[in-house]
Image (cartoon, rainbow, N blue to C red):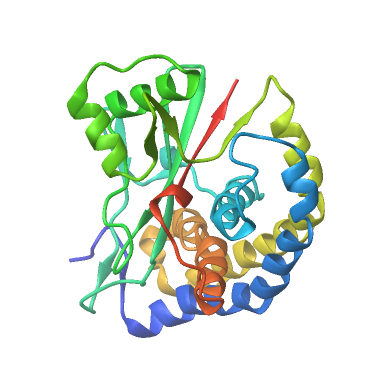
Length: 263
C-alpha cells in the first residue's frame, strides 16, 4: 500500500521548514531596521492610527509588507484534495508536531467596502483574535461613526482591546488605511525600499523551499511538490520578522494584530 500524501519526520521538517526560517532570519534585522528608518514618512501619510508609536505600528507594517511581498502565498485551489466549496492537503508526521509556526496571517473580508486583516497567534500569545462576520461589520460601523446598539457585541469588541469607549462614543484602536484617500498607494511608495529587500528574499525562500521539498515527496505523488513547496515557503518571512521583534522585547498587544483596508 502507498499513502496519497507525504509523511515527514524530524529530518524533513528541519531541512525544509527550519532551513527556510534560518535563511529568512539572516535578513530579519535588516528589514526591521529599514522599516523603522522610514517611520517619519510612514506617519506623515496620516492614516487612521498613524500617530501611534512605531512600536505599536510595527506589527501592522510587518503584516502589510508580508501580505504584499511577492511569492508569499499559495493557491488553495491547487490543494490535492477537494470537496464542495473547500480544498485541503494532508501531511503526515512521525513526530508529535509538524513545524512550529507561532505566527499565521489570515484575511477575513466582509462585504465589498472593506477588508479586515488579522494575525493568529499561538502559544503564549493571543489564542483567538478572530472576529465573526457580525463583529467585523460592527467594527466597521464604529469606524464610520455609526451607532451599534447590541450591548453584548460592543462588550465583545471592547474585551478584544480593539475598541474603546471614549465619553459617550466608541473608537477603534487599530490602524485603517484608505484607498480613496490615497493612503494605500502612499504606503506602498514609502515602503518601496523594504519591498525591494523582501521580494528578493522571499524569492530565495520560495526557490529553496521547492527544491528542498522535492526530496521528501514520493514519486507517485510528485504532483504535490508544487503545493508543499509553496506551503512551506509561506509565512516564513512573517515568522522570522516576528522573532526579531521578540528579540527587541517589543510587547505584543491586541490593538497591534488587526488592521483595516477600506475603499
